[in-house]
Structure formats: structure tokens, C-alpha cells
Image (cartoon, rainbow, N blue to C red; front, side, top):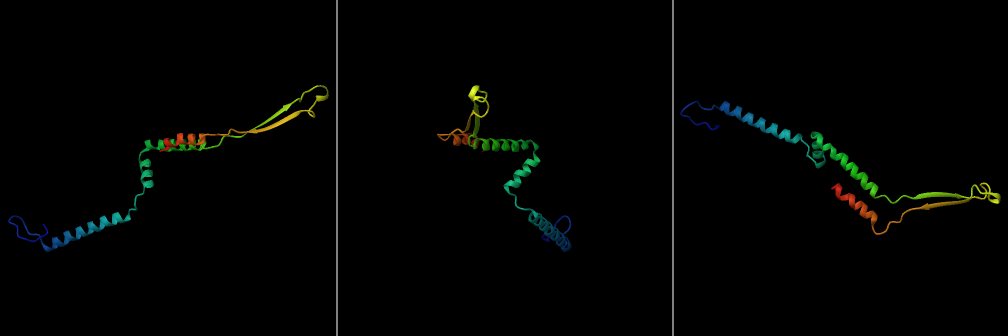
Length: 130
């Protein structure tokens, strides 16, 4: 106890001991407050990065997320354009002989999506990313 009152058994606490105990408590209180003052606030990204660093088995989720992002990017792309070239009558006979009388056809085509097909594709990948 810090209060000086006579005890039936034992000895009394001297003012010097009170001073020393008070000094210990003050140093302890300052040490705890300094330790908390040095810490920066923990953000969600810091907490997640620390968790992944501490648990190697959770690193697989980064690769899964990258795979889902790739699928989402692929699903969001428009159908590709296709170019074609047809050559007819290149090996003809008589007056149609040679390359001069050949018929050339150049084509460019693509699929026209109707009915929200692109939105449906991207919507199928989006729930897996949550």
C-alpha cells in the first residue's frame, strides 16, 4: 500500500519507497504512451498485406483474383473482326489464263451481339470476384 499507516506485523513504507514507487509508475505510464504514439493507424490494406505475409497458404487467393480479373477482361471484349481474301480464276484457261483475269474478293466481318449478351457474359464473371 502506498498510504503510511502502522501495520501490526512488518514494517512501514517509508517516504523514499513511496517516491521510488511513484517514479516507477510514472516511467511505466510514459513508456506505454510512447509505444502507442509511435504506431501508425492500421488501415485495411495494411492489415490484408500483413495477413497474407504471415500466412503463405493465403497467397493462392492473389492468383485466383488475377485469373478472375483476366476472365472479366476477356468477357468484356467485343467480338473480333475477321478479314478474308478470296481469289478465283487464277489458273484459268484460254482468255482467263494468268493472274490478270483473276477475281479478288476482300471481306471484313464481325458478329453483331443483340439482347445484352456482353452484359450477361461479364455478369457471369462478376459474382465470382466478390
